[in-house]
Length: 141
Figure 1 (cartoon, one colour):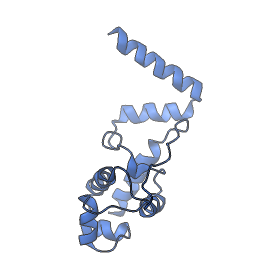
Figure 2 (cartoon, one colour; figure 1 turned 45 degrees about the vertical axis):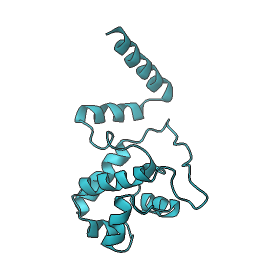
Figure 3 (tube, one colour; figure 1 turned 60 degrees about the vertical axis):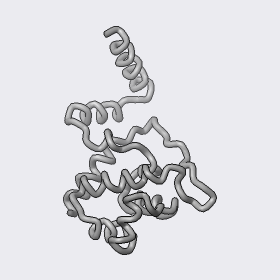
Figure 4 (spheres, helix red, strand yellow; figure 1 turned 135 degrees about the vertical axis):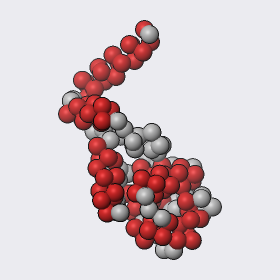
């Protein structure tokens, strides 16, 4: 499982854009997310990617028992904002990773990954120019 975790973390780090800043995460006064299903979905994605069972995930994420982890993964109970930020920090994930839609960004083709790496090496003006060019080509077709 350790190797799968390292692969996962490498993919997450490779998907970071220096010019994109995440908006603050909206929470209730108790620190619960406004969209608890998103955190549950991302926990399921993480578990599937790591090919781990719920007991392993509960231990890895320091969430107590398998049964508690199961209720969180099913969105029957919610992670607190503090637990979500701790998990992101422990796994070296970007702030807010558990709140965003990660379904498409986890599994990039090699071509997509190469493009992302090149964009990261470019300055923000070059990145924005490329995005504009791609949108223009898409409109013309």
